[in-house]
Every structure is written in structure tokens, then in C-alpha cells.
Length: 190
Image 1: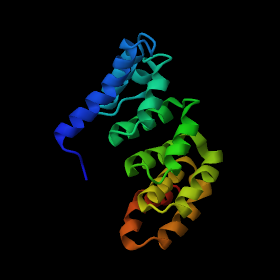
Image 2: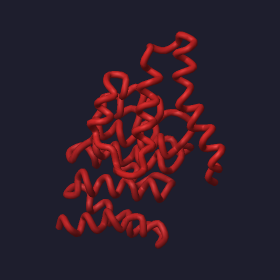
Image 3: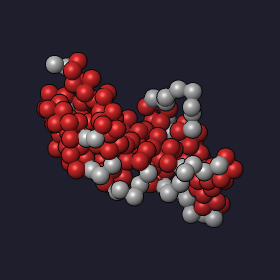
Image 4: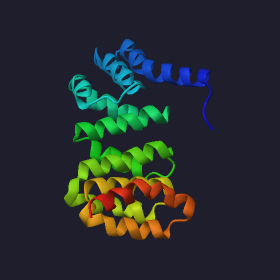
């Protein structure tokens, strides 16, 4: 169930203003609220994807702001985009955050899918099968299994396409549709 526009606006305002209130109380460095607000602004862009450079331009506090947003309890789409940004930046902080979010079945699906994709980006060809095959074969959510298939087909197709094909055959027809992109990628790499 999606929140209405008013509830979404209140949630965004509270997410963006929390650091400003903390700064006013003396609990945060002078520019932490500004960095977080700028990060939220970048994450809120809907016209085109944002590359790594604008996130790098946030400076040393940018990764902490992105991590904080990714782990916040509200606004799953912003959280998923923060996860994507952490993986894009290849932040040293990203691995543990992404693993935690991917493994937590209580997290929103969009956040878990982004975390699984990000783990594939961080792992690279050598480590992607070890990092992602548990999600491919054992996760309860078919959308997360499909995200793992996509990430594996992208990061380590030679080592993973066999496992992707096997898992796709195990899926019920509705869930199997989520594997189309990964299976197509595997076919192109044959």
C-alpha cells in the first residue's frame, strides 16, 4: 500500500529536517544537515539517473549521509537510490550496509533488490557467485531472487549462468518472468 501524497511529503520533510534540528541542538557538525539535504535532493531526481560525480561532490560526509538515508525507516525509494549510490561510489561502508539490507526480509522489496544489485557491483566477477548465489537459490522473495539473477548475469556470467538457468526452471511461471533479463544476458554471452 502506497502512502498518499500528503503522508509522503511529511515523511520527506521529517527525513530532510532531522539533521537540521540536530544541528540546531548542537548534535551534528555544522554542515551535516546540508550534506544530507543535498544528498536527498540528488536522490529525488526523477528525470535521469545521477552518476557518481555529484555524490562524490558531497565531500567526506556524503557517504555517511547516504548510509544514514539507506538505513532510515522511511521512504523506500529514496533508500533504494541511496543504496545504489553507495554501490556506485564503491564506498568502503557499502558492503556491510548492503549485506544487512539484502538479508533482512522485513526490509521493503525495492530496498532489498537494490542491495542485492549493489552487492553484485561491489563483489565483481570473482566474488559475485559466493556473495549472491544464496539470494538466488534460497531467498523467499521471488523479486529478490530475480535481482540476484540480474546481478550475477551482469557481474559473473561465465560462473553463474548455469545456476541462473537452473533456478529459473524451479520458479513458478509468474516468478520466472522476473528472470527474463538475466536469461537474455546469459544467452548473449554464450
